[in-house]
Image (cartoon, rainbow, N blue to C red; front, side):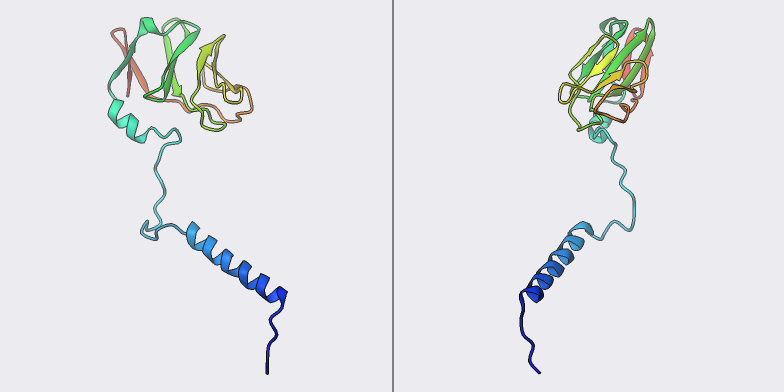
Length: 147
């Protein structure tokens, strides 16, 4: 019995080979024993360990109704009301650009125009649909410290 190679047979075989390669590539290294990834959404897992516990700024450097961006730490610290400080990731949740400014009560990303409220990091204007993740800070003795 002889089999004739058709165009359909070649296309099916090529597609199957590609699918097997794709599944193998997505499978990972196989050494993870099913453990979940623990990387942070901001990518600060390394930077956070290096800067945790370090003073970011004095409280006088953070304007009331505004904030200050710390690019190296990927953090933005805001002061929505006198004496009330908040901190958020400085990485936009839309496409991971670093936010560029804080003005008029919002943290602003110039890449695509997303704006986030300084009081809680929630989306004031898209295209971002998720708020900026909160970061942990402590305020003591006139210093803002990343924790």
